[in-house]
Image 1: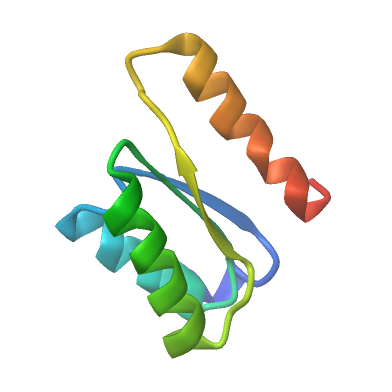
Image 2 (image 1 turned 180 degrees about the vertical axis):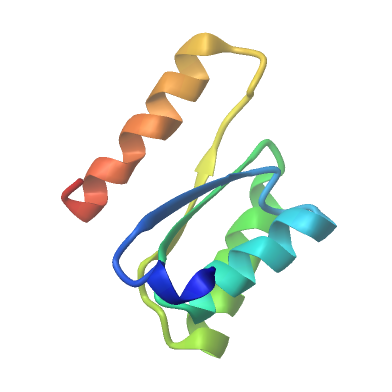
Amino acid sequence: MFNDLKNKVCIITGGAGLIGAAFSRSCAEYGAKVVIVDMEEGNSKSLALRLIDETKNKNIFFQKCDITSEKSVVHSVRSHRRFGK
């Protein structure tokens, strides 16, 4: 399943939570471009930096998002344009 993630964009909501962080790590390890979406800015930024260091995947970043706000979600989804997609 994860073998085909090279150069794909994974937008992970709740990316700083336990399950989200584990999924973010797996995606990063398999070469995906990872967008960690969460309301918790501090933990999410820390996770992104830690994953960059540990996986050597530089295509990981945090996007603050309130999933109860359509405007915030649209902005987060459009953030994948950083990766040329």
